[in-house]
Image (cartoon, rainbow, N blue to C red):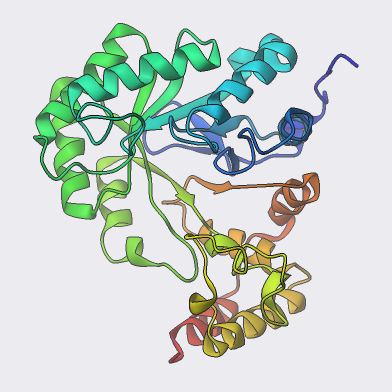
Length: 332
C-alpha cells in the first residue's frame, strides 16, 4: 500500500527552536542506531519511520557507522526514503555523522578533513541524497587540529552537502573552541548532541551553559540510559533484555540493586504523575529549554507512541524536581 502521511501530524508534536537559528526541531526525534541495520526486517524499519512521521517526528538521525553492520542503516533508510518519503523530503530533517571507525586504515576514523569529506560523500550515496540537513563531527579527535576539523565542516556546508553542522560528545571547553572557530569561518554550529539522562548529568556542569551562551541548540541521546529508565528492569534483569544479551552498551554490572532501587522509586513517582517511567525520563531531559530535542531509539511502534505521549505531561512542579533530585543523589 502506498504510504500517505497523516494530515494531522503537525498537531501532535511540539517544535522547539534550535538555539538562535531559524530551524525548529520536534521535541522528540528518532535515532536509527540499532534497529535499522541488516538484522532488522526492512518492513519493520518502514513501520517505525511511518509511525514516527505520522506523529510529527520530522527529524531522523543517522551516522555512517549505524547498523549493524556499519553503513547498513543509511542504506536501508535511503531505500525507505525513496519508496515512502520522497514527497515529503522538504519536511524532513535528516542528519548523519562521522567520527568513529568506518573503514580500515588511517583515513577511516576520527576527524581529518579527508575522512569527514569522504565519509559524507559515502553517506549521501548510501541514502540517495544530494545533501543532509545536519552533519555532525561524532567525537573529538585528540590528534587532528581542531581548526582542520572545523574547516572541513565549513567546507561541507559551502559545497552544499549539508545545510547545518553540529558537534557530538564534545566536552564544554572543546565545544566552546569549536563553536568559536566555526563562527569565525562563517558557518555557525547549529547543535550539539551529548549523552544526557537522569543517570548521566555531566552536561549540567558547564556544557549546557556554554551552548546557551553561544546560541547553540542541543539534542540528548540515550535519554533512557540504554533502557534503564523504563519499566523493563523493575523486577530485575529479564533473560531477553539488552542487559542480559552481552551488549557492551548495557551490562548487568550497571544494574546494581542500589540502581534498581532508584529506578523503582522513580517509577513510583512517574505513576503518581500518570506516566510511564520512560515518559517521565524523557520529559525530565526536556525540562530545560537549553535542550531542544530528545533522541529516542525504537524497536516497536508502541515505544514511539509512548515517547510522543510524554508531551501531554512534560512539566514538573518544584516538589517533583526536588523529589527526583533526592532519588538521583542518594548513595548507591
